[in-house]
Length: 636
Ligand SMILES: Nc1ncnc2c1ncn2[C@@H]1O[C@H](COP(=O)(O)OP(=O)(O)OP(=O)(O)O)[C@@H](O)[C@H]1O
Image (spheres, rainbow, N blue to C red):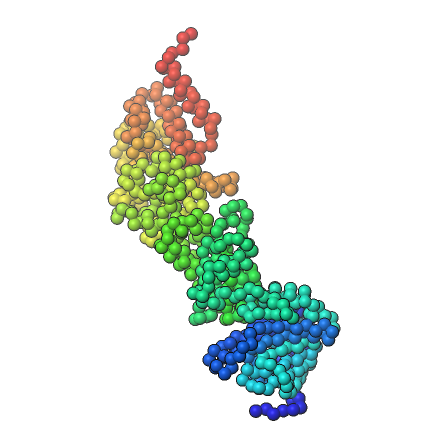
């Protein structure tokens, strides 16, 4: 037991001396962080006391745990007081004087003697208790440990030494009395102090009082167990974070973890996606706290970019309080938290999709665009994201009936090796596309993609499980059970040649006349295997991107090179059969060519890529005139 009456004198540890010298002479402007540091220490001290009193009944009393700020304008003193754990004589020496603590150690490690750099590092690492000397030219610490009857006064002017002497009549806890520097009267003004407290300490889990006024009235609900919270409390916190006075969140996720690192988080999904309503890019971030002290209120790196629609707060005791925005991303704990949060959000969505499909689809209609964005950017979670995607399909009756890739495969033919989709202007235009005929005949489901974004996503995804994802207007399409699908491309070429050779001379003639007419417009004219009723359709050559996608890309970039398509002709279509019979008569070749051109235009219209309406209408008109002439010869 230390029975001391006169002040004992101590010398600061060399590193601390250096730190203090720097602090008292530095021109570092953001002095208000000192208040944040001291409040954070007070909050830690209250945590420690709360914990001790849980296990040791004798330490308990009726005092409410709180932090008080007591400004004394007359004497230019600001006291920051807590009734937390307090410090014994030896703890005082050890904690604030002779051993550099984590914040200050980090600072010193990185400072490396360059004064300019040292000053900028103050903001980066914070310097814990010692930041008091940025505000004060004398600091007194009055403290009484919860385990002792007797208190102590620590005092220093920050120049190299400190003293400790006994102090009578003080309550449990610690008061840090800052004798403010001459020019810092503002730190005794209520408005200035409230501003600082609101900025940094709103989420401190203990009441902070300025005089008699409670300054932080936001309850830190994220550290409470889920079972003890009501919907109203969750709503209130959401409304606070989202600055939204009326709405409840669409859903929330309350996470707590103790290992391998400690954090609490509440994330909220809003009802509506403002980006869909033309409000521009969502720019709010997540509130980031370290030990309940706000470090940043708009952190945009804690979640991947595509989840930017979520509101929330993350609090971790394993994050350094004074970390800068730049160095946060390099922090291991921060990166791990981001990873866990992302996975938990996605698994929450997956469970919702499984347990309550309707609720999930409602969410998807608002925020599906975010998940689609994730496919292109979050490679680590691509498979999970792919399972969360939904698309309209040929089994539905409108674009509102959405199907997942997994549900699609459940219904697929066992010989099916590919997942099929087709883009187009709208659901009904797509459903009338002739490329679908063989799929309809074979009962194969095709995703209908009126939204070009969906097509970009699927072509980007390219594969789901072991299935290639292909646009059905592509030469790469392999139909289930199609023997040709199994052969390699060389054999396939040979087979194609053989097949073309096996064509009737009449059909061959028609193809060559079409080819002649359309040589500048199409890559080739070939026999079709995918059509059952329609005379023709356009398909993309192997390796080319789909029609719809080309359309979108060329809309954004006029110089985007569009690839020529293959015109496939159905020999069994009535019109083609008739053209075949005409083909042996050279007088009819001009007419066959005219039909070939019109068929190409028709297919272009169906695909939504027709570009020459005047030529199309004038060709139809001249054909109608010819027909009309035959039906009713003009009487002259
Ligand atoms: N209000 C207080 N009540 C009780 N102990 C305190 C108080 N303020 C500071 N201390 C003690 O002094 C020590 C040093 O404080 P300082 O702020 O310099 O570093 P730290 O809080 O340990 O580090 P960091 O903030 O970087 O995690 C604390 O660990 C704590 O033991």
